[in-house]
Length: 241
Image 1 (cartoon, helix red, strand yellow):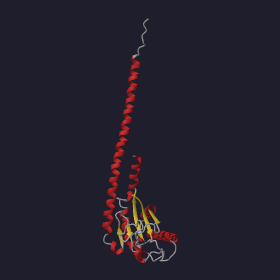
Image 2 (spheres, rainbow, N blue to C red):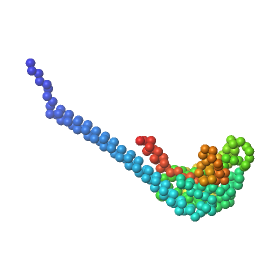
Image 3 (cartoon, rainbow, N blue to C red):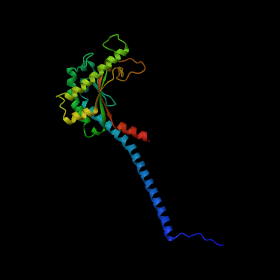
């Protein structure tokens, strides 16, 4: 007895090919989407480091060009990481005091409006994460013989009070003559941080390591340290890979 398999109708065949075509189209769209996402990630991984390099180089050139003639008389330097370091303690504060000296106030009146102009310029403003006013002390406390621990905490309190006093002066100084926009930006991006004697310096200006001799005078300093948000963007790309 011959049995014949039922043949698919023309309508069923059309449905089959339409379904297959839809599936292939969907797969192609998925592959295309994956390719686009991959290309965007590759472009970002190249673009962000380029922006970082351009921003850091641009800031370095702008800061050095603006302040190169003033650094010596201020007792200041600009480090490779773009930190502006005021490092003559006799100009900054009296020993053991958080009250800004008149000399330091005059320096800030000259320095800060120009510094803000650079940081708030169209070229750099959107890439600034924060600016830290950092206070640092030597490991000593008024040449006394108290314990290292007590000296550390006394200096912690002092360094915090000094950076806060510096930030308060900058916000309220009439000579700085900050606009409302600049004050709002300052309060959003500036931090006042006291490090006590956690980061002492050697006589060449580098950090003390492995029991090396500290330069007590250079260790007593106030620094303006800029951090860009590009560093965070680079870190995000690395984490995603």
